[in-house]
Image 1: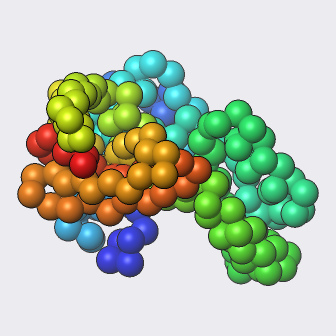
Image 2 (image 1 turned 30 degrees about the vertical axis):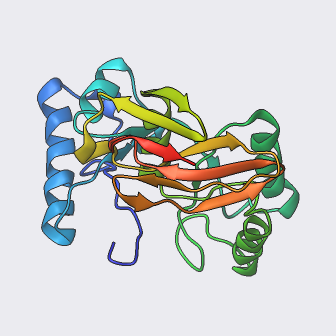
Image 3 (image 1 turned 180 degrees about the vertical axis):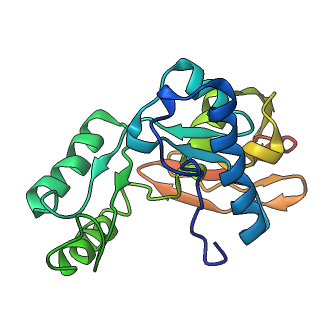
Length: 223
């Protein structure tokens, strides 16, 4: 956790949660939450269902106080490790503009681990080679970004050479705090941007400028 890994609730004893009573369901979630907080000092804000088994009741209970729940994944490791299979998952996601969640139970050892761990590290190298086209992040960061992008509106006004962008969202900042990306058509011009008195870093590509801003902050000014 201290190195940036996310600890997600996966239930207390790994049951099929669709077969539990209401109280049993709450107990499975509560005990794991308490164990995570006791060990890392902060709560889990995502949930991964054992066996990927859930229904609307289970989903509603698991999502209380969380930004996202894993509803599907693609398997990494064991028989699901050929280079062609792994790369196809990424290529299909790029083609459809979608998110994917990889899942492995073991790398060097454990259930369905890799026969050769280099198959896993080679896949990481492949992802690294695509870093100008994809974003690899924790499930929490991706879920928060998607929710914030869908749940934020902006009001744009322009006065002379100054464009003002005012973001607005009703999301809970303590759960969904994240940065969103603002895309600006600039042509050959360079811009300066700031939010809440702080300069924002600007990246340029193909006559467009990209900058990160907080949906929970004040107005973004672009000059």
